[in-house]
Amino acid sequence: MLRNIISICFVSMLLILGLYGCHNKERPSLIICFVDYSESALSSRSYYQDQLQKIGDTLKPGDRILLFRITDKTQTDAIPILDSGEYPRSSMIENPIIYKQQCEEFKSRFVAKIQSAYEDINSGNISKYTDILGVFVIAEDIVSDLESYNAKLIILSDGLNDSILLGRRYNFEKDKINDKYCSDLINTLEQNNLIPKLPGVSVYFIGVSSAQGDKNDERLAEVRKFWQTYIEHTGAKLKGYGKTGLFIQ
Image (tube, rainbow, N blue to C red; front, side, top):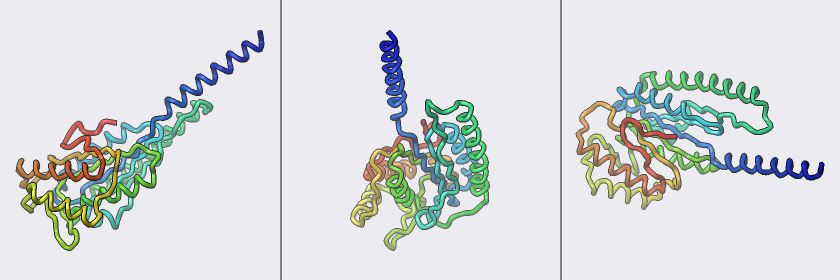
């Protein structure tokens, strides 16, 4: 009789552990954010801050946020202005009171870190160029180093790349953007092995239509078409493009 009871308890414990293991098979999210520091996006910085706060509110156990600047030195100055660290993970054997305390400490540290990031965003620094293409290069490096995460790339920008590539300036705000322009640029990137590989990464372009300036609907449509095509070539998936309601954890 006692042996049967022990056997039943043992099997029950295995089932519980198995269910717990299945529940935790979902990979945590690595949320890689980039904020546009260009003049064309200057008026949108408060909007970008609001979006960052909403993104921070979606964090779950194991998730992590990295925040970088989009400037003329996106690639050469890729130092995060915010690294949340990993949201504490729970376990069956951990004291729930201790885990709750760990979560509260993480949230307190995160608030301080994001306030510091806001100060940097509000500093008024304006970049001469806007190397948005460099965002994807940096993202590739990060994702390849942190493969255990489910990567999400969030670009807080008006989408107007303005950078010098192979001796030529590509200015999405002033150049005549059409199918040939987009095709030629992507072909140039491909021929020079400058398109990063981001298979499985979800991309969100937030704030594209929120910046001020002389950007008519036709230009916005052409710019969007370029990013859709470019992102497809990286192997990533464009999950959101626009101003609101884009990022869903």
